[in-house]
Length: 328
Image (cartoon, rainbow, N blue to C red; front, side, top):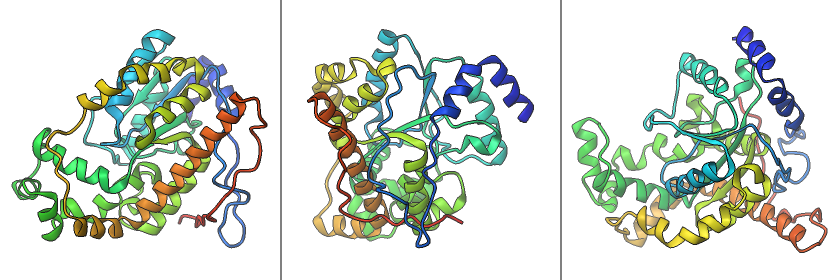
């Protein structure tokens, strides 16, 4: 693996230099486990010409709409969009992760790569991390959308018992305590995309939340929310003009068509008591969602102040001190 890393550096020295120069140490914690400084202040670094971007997209978070824009941006701005055809293998074992990293860094830039896959720390295999981006949505809305999608539109291969669980209303699924709705690995699935590949990411809510927040701060250049796709494309265009110049206009031009094209027509909303039950079960995911939403709002505010000719570097108010425990 290290021989391979040396070979890649010799072939693409500018890429390796770019990676090593852009990495910033956000990992310092105080004695109580809090990040030093304001961790709701986002990464505002602008990258005019990046070699590649990794979109480890979370299912049912507007990724099909995003990819429609990425497709057009790739053709207009001269980069290759590589979309994985593997949809049901977000978790990889140690051997599979090493192979994935090797295959990934052999791709010739510039390109944007997307796949449904939990966060991978490339440094564990002797390589610097690529630029990560992602998009999330309201955690309950995401699970409801996924349930209706699998039931009505995209049946997944699974055992008959699990298929029976999907062939219910979401209310029935929750009331019956079916695993496909209330199991830990389902409730923590959103966090796992940012926490990483360790089994603890789908087993321990507190650790999964802590690692997910740490990785957002340390390793993600941008994470937006589906509820504000226009703002997401605005910040993408600001941070990565070489890849996303014109993205906001393209999205706004096709917004109505994109949202209706990928809308789940069979989605039915459960009664409020079911929503309340699930929101309690999703407490860590909602903590994470609010964290991401505030960071992205602060990022938008930064660039909008810059657009208005104001000082963009004014302190951003941190209304809630976020504790991030040192993962084991």
